Amino acid sequence: MRISFDFSDLEAFLAVKETGSFHLAADRLNLSQSAITRRVQKLETALDSVLFERTTRDVKPTLAAKRLQARAEAILSDARETAIAMRDESVAFAHQRNALVTVAVIPTVVAQVIPEAVRTFRANGYAARFRFLDYTANKVAEAVAKGDADFGICSIPELEPNTRFDPLFDDQIVLAYPQGHPIAAKPDLTWLDLDQVDLIVPARGTGNRLLIDEAMARARLPLNWSVEFRRSTTALELVAENVGLALLPRSAVRSLRDPRVGFAAVSDPAVLRPIGFLTRHGHKATESEAAFIDIIRRITMSWSDPEPR
Image 1 (cartoon, rainbow, N blue to C red):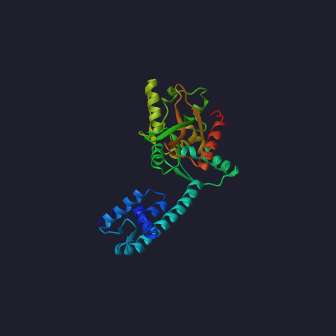
Image 2 (cartoon, helix red, strand yellow):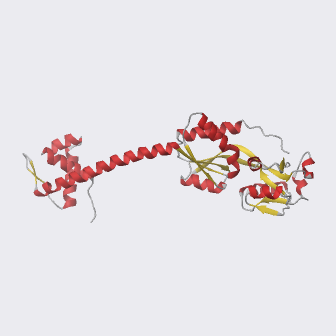
Image 3 (cartoon, rainbow, N blue to C red):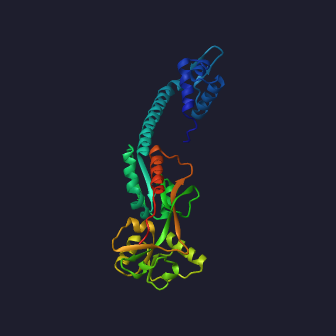
């Protein structure tokens, strides 16, 4: 059976029943008398029952009205209790959302930015909890777009339609080599110098590989490689074990510090991957989110790149 009346119709009915007047019921509910009449008529039609006998002098409830009164009062009482409970829960959830900051971030940025940002955040008196989701750039974009993360920190991904990328800093692709390797003696390393080495490169289809391939295509340079990798930790371990020399983001070499590995910038051309914030259109940042984003901006602005080697 389809229900074709609502709470406002029951409220109008009860007001008429209790005041004995459509006019007084209208005053109680701050409505026009015609609005009260329409609501009662709608209820009568839905229930297929006459609720009031109207004369020029008074309004008398029918037996159906007397039977309906207790049920209508119970329905409205339950509705009010539900509304109060939901508002209370909404306040609680809002507090939790304000106290929990969820950030989707690519792994190579975590060690370089996040620890200092969290320490600074707490030192400034903020008390939010953090949830960090370490994903690939495209997974970060997906998490932000779906609302699984409040914002993201990543290299520029395939942007989802409802997301926005704001650049934060440029992360250069560098060459990681085992300490003591002859290539460390070259003062200005270029891509042509890599033609005769065992090169370890990011796997095809990854964002870093795409940046490298596009740069090589524009410069009309070959990319002769011997090993592909998906995780920076794997590439650095291969370098440390003298398997080859790896092309990695500088942030990865910094964050995964290994005394067995040195790194050098490669120029002509320099290959840069933009790192930035990924936000969702229409999302209003909480005070905690905004503070954390501002702290990360200040940290990255204060960096001065040390000379590689």
